[in-house]
Image (tube, rainbow, N blue to C red):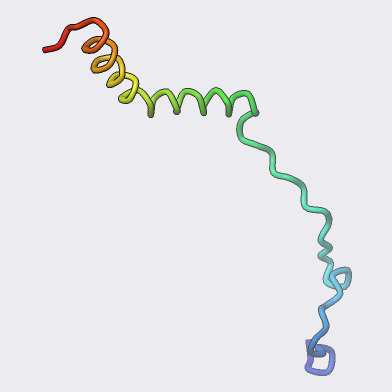
Amino acid sequence: MSAEEAQPGTTPNPEQDGFRLGPIAPRPSLVSDRAAGVIMWISALILLTPLLVFVYVYVIRNRLLGDAP
């Protein structure tokens, strides 16, 4: 493209270059919404397991059942 053809402040015609932008299609999701929910709940349980064990051992066993060491 010569200097006479390229004018500052203008964009090239996409049809002229053989490249036309159409509407951008959404990417397909890797997993379904239901599977994503199941994965979220499983990961939350895995992350909260130490807290649940702490609550069971120190609050329920030691306080309510009287098994204080």
